[in-house]
Image 1 (tube, helix red, strand yellow):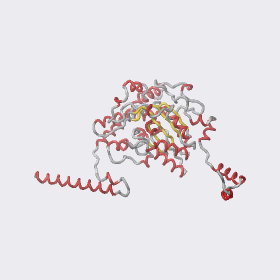
Image 2 (cartoon, one colour):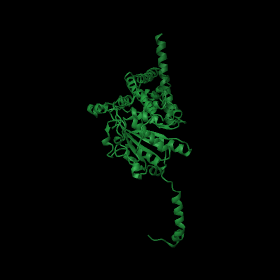
Image 3 (tube, one colour):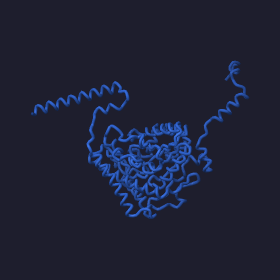
Image 4 (spheres, helix red, strand yellow):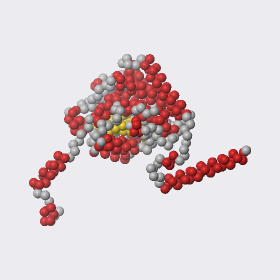
Length: 420
């Protein structure tokens, strides 16, 4: 390559360029994760990579693991949650299990159009809701109704979407809970947008974005994590790895050592946790939220759990998995595990268990009664709230529906007169 005299004249002298480069380097943003690395006294790689073993505090039999067998290591150490936190989580576990069973029955009775059950995954949902402060945001998937309710949303409003109504049922701004929706992974982009806005406004807000293992195969997953990492946003990405993306097993989605290992590619910290151990979940997600709030940037947590029931009531899970596989996970049930753990610690007795069961049954009754009520239907609402200014196509469809309804009404009126 040759440089002309004119080009050379435009090039700054070395003595002029070096200070400019130094200023640029000084102005470059520092990765907030570096502060966490210094605090833990470990390398950046050890901070970003998950612990060599998944974090598990309470085993499937309900007993507390010895500290040396909890999967912790330097920079990946966790304290046991308080007794109050454990009891609050247990209550939400019981309510969540009852809600899952009740909603499955309501689908069979025709009171709900569809329900993606989270039976067996309730520990993930409860911990996700309880680790957040009042001003934080939760962005759930369509399977995370238990998390939405644990965040304080009315049970009937939570299930409005699955009844088949045109709207989501609750006010996202009021509850700081994103609307559940069926498009896969779009909620991660919404979560990142809220976190970015909160950071620009100087708000003390952490966003927890939930997704499943299938979502990690979507382009939106990459875009959300990369944007959050580049702009150092306070987002905790929580992957509930329930082993299947509908009928596709994890082995056909990724051959990474774990989904948590994907974090290092974006420059953020990753962690693996037993998704059926609510004690470990509270500890891991609680610390992730704390680090995000302190300015360490986004984090990725992968929980290993299992979808005990079909993907939805429209799915036949026996076509892609064996009953023996499901039976293996029954022994790891999060509710029975927590019941044993709290009972052995003297925190749960028959009286308290009965009180919690009554609360769960009250929620189930509320769902039965609320979802049995007839809701007035306005057909034109299908078009009214799609765009602030309706498109020509929506106007045409609206007019077609109005004409059809008018003709039906006229026909019914004629038939009534003829019958007199």
